[in-house]
Structures are given as C-alpha cells and as structure tokens.
Length: 77
Image (cartoon, rainbow, N blue to C red; front, side):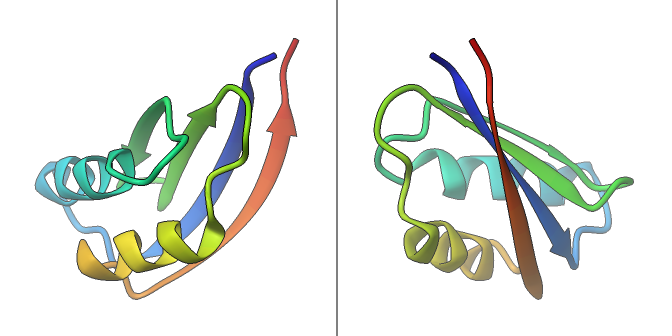
C-alpha cells in the first residue's frame, strides 16, 4: 500500500528550490518518491512500508533552506 505525506513548506521561491528540496528529502530513509511544488508551498513524500522519520524530513527541509513545515498523511491502496 502506497502512502503519502503532504508537507506544507514555507520558503520555496523557484523551481531550483523544488529540486534542492526533492534531493534532500529523497535521501531520508524509507522515502520512495518526492515531488515539491513551490507555487503551492507543498511537497508530497511517498513511501511504501515504514513511515519516514519526521525529524529526519524536518532536518532535510532545513538543510534545503525551507523555513518551516507542517504535514498531513494519506494512505492509498
């Protein structure tokens, strides 16, 4: 079962911000896929089994230059 976490991220300004954020979050364990949207101020993190660490995702967002984040989780079948 594929699951998704949607992150609300402040601080993205352009496509380069999306790419950097996707790269940083992709390096977090258990992350299958990441897609960031600077115009929406969101990133969708997909994973299969174990949920990625929110602490590690938060650290990745800060390393990418994101100011702040919040999230919601959705499960898909």
